[in-house]
Each structure stands twice: as C-alpha cells, then as structure tokens.
Image (cartoon, rainbow, N blue to C red; front, side, top):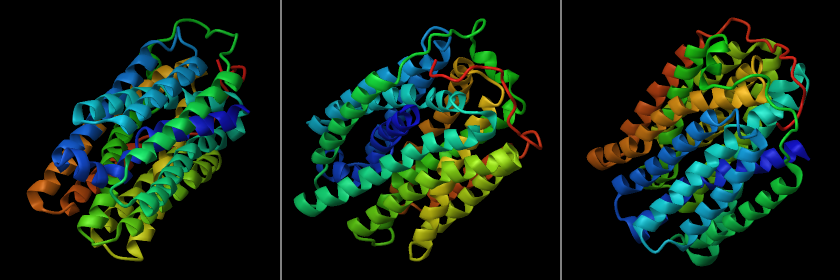
Length: 391
C-alpha cells in the first residue's frame, strides 16, 4: 500500500492544495476578489507558504521522519482546503491558501525519496514517476469535479468544489495514518541542507528547477483564464483542456521516469524542458488543435521533469538526505514561483491579454533546458547502499 498512498497524497498536495485554484480562479475572482492582481497574489501567498513548508522539511530532515512529514502535511492541507470552502472574505481565503501551501510542501518534498527507497536501483525512476502521477490524478479529479459542480450549480460556483476536495483529503489523511508508517532505522550520521552538494551537477539541478517553477506557476495559474478571456473558450472547453493537462501529468512522470532509468537523467530532463517550452508558446495561439497539443506536451513535461530530477537526487542520497536536498532545490523552485502568479496577473491587467505572460513562461522553460544540459552526461542510477523503507 506504500506507493498507492503516496500517489493519493501527491494528488491532494498538488491537485487540490495547489493547482486546483487555477480552475476556480475566474469564479473566485468574479464572486469575491474582483482583481486579477489580487487573485495572482493569492497564488503567490500559497507558494510562499509552500516555500516555508519546503524549508521546514529540509531543516528538520534529520529529526522528522519523511513519512511523518507526509502525514502531518495531509492534515494541514485538509484544514486549508476546508477553510477555502468556507471563506467569506479575502483574508480568510489567504489563510486557507497558506495552510494548503504549507501542507502541500510537507507532503511532496519527502514523498519521492520514500518511493525511491522502496524499490531497486533499476526501477527508481519508475517508482518516483508513479508517485508523481498522483499530481495528474489530483488535477483530473479537480477538473472533473469543477465541471460537474458548474453543470449543476452554474459556472460561478466554487465553494462546493473545495468542500468535496476537503472530504477526499481527509480520507487520504486517514489512509496515510493507517499505512504510511515512519521507519525504525534512523539516518546514518547528521543530515543537513548541504546534502545537496553531494549530488553531481547540483547547481544545474537547482537552476533548472527554478526555471521550471516560474514556467508552471504562470501556465497552471492562468491557463483557464487565458483560454476563457483571450481565446473565447467556454468554461467547459477551458476546463477540459486543463483536465487534459492533468491526464498527461499522470503519464509523464511514469514515462520519463522510466525512460531516464534507461537513457540517463540529463537527456530525459533536457528533452522534458524543451517540450515544455514549445507547449507554453502554443497557448497564445488560442485555437485548436494547438490547445490540446499544448496541454498534452506540457502535462508530460510537468510531471516528467521533477520525477527525473528526484531520481537524480535519489541516486546519491538516502531518504532523509533526499528530503533535505529536495527541500533545498524546492526553495529555488518556490522563489521562482513566488514571482509567477503575481507577475502574470500584473502583465494581464497592463496589456489586456495573457500572451506576454506566457512568453515569459516559455523563456523560463528554455532556461531550465539549458541548465539541465549541464548535468552529468549519464545520470545513471547508483546504489546508495540504503535499506528500503518509509523512514
């Protein structure tokens, strides 16, 4: 049950607590916020909290077991989504976004390391990719739920979506409490954030994840709004494209994670970021079949790139050191994402279009591709000599 619980946890952390906001952004903005700049700021605050959660996991990796972090993160995310469902004002929305963001980082940062330690070296990329597929499942669930709620209650309904997601998150938290247990074997020696420096090509890893963070912050926050406001897509059409992104996210980590086991981490990661660049550039076209193609390619790259990066780190580190190192690169990722939602909203209000914002996202993805090309030529998995487990 270890991998299935991690898959569901990843779906709650990212599909509900993070990316589900993009689906509800137009309705929330029209009903309560009334400003895309403020709406973007809400996304920024969510990411700020995510950054704080990543820092906490990284600093406490030597004292808090990765499984314990996941379980606590699920409780925080459940609380956050519950607050969002009940929010009567913008300040309460802020509280919910902060709780969900902080909890999401506590779930996601240690999860790949737990998955990677549970299998042999030759299947590490696949196991981590499977865990990352939960992100896509969460996006699909959010998209489908939003479509159903809008069909029943109208396109302005958003509270019931978060209310139902809160119930699902609580059930996943209960499953984690039952099946995801801290390991009994402690890490050998002290664990520090500097564990990242033991990973070959760690500078390129950090820079690429930063560019990736800026690209997905803009893409996933404003995709639905861009298709509705710029291209004239209906709410159902735009949500369907977003859902297709989720379907591809589900497959991307598995496909690219497994491919990286065979061809190496550098090649797989560079290809993923190159594809992401093209996918972002297709959004301003605002027409089919380019919207579908963009969603598919972006989704594959979105889950594939971090799965490969996580496998690259896990090749060199045990689960606790992985949590410290992945937390460190996530800080760079988070700092880049802090800029994305607010920058995208500001550009949209100044230009009357989201096109320029997506050009910025494409440039960030291209930069990530260049940075990932500096990793070792063959990022093959290496045995760490650690025992499998959820420690």
